[in-house]
Image (cartoon, rainbow, N blue to C red):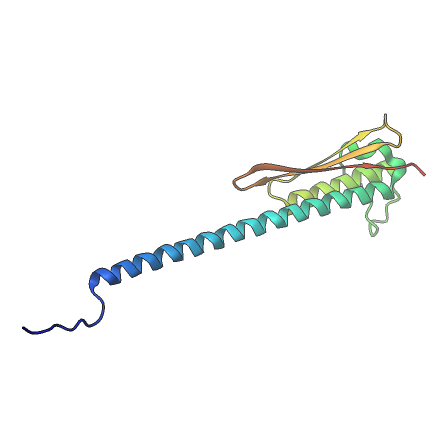
Length: 150
């Protein structure tokens, strides 16, 4: 009898190795996609925090406007280069106008809202942004601030 020496892989062994390798590659691709999604979500959350902080700073800068920040937004040309002398109420409406534009530009389906509660002492503002997050629906970030009049 002749002895047969085994040389190389059989077709079955090659197919099994290819299957294991394919499953591993699919797992790596899934982890990569999940990482991209988490990165996008983190970016939106960071933008939301920064936008809320921006509006809080605007309110603290223009303390005498009070409830005007919860009112309608409108463009009054109160920008430093606009050369327009605005009242505190007009400045508040202009601030809200610019801020809502930023919210819409930086967050997908972004919406911004400011609510004022003058019944508290000091007055309280609720600053909220909301946006659409893929796979999670609408996400909201809200901060309450109290601003003392000067």
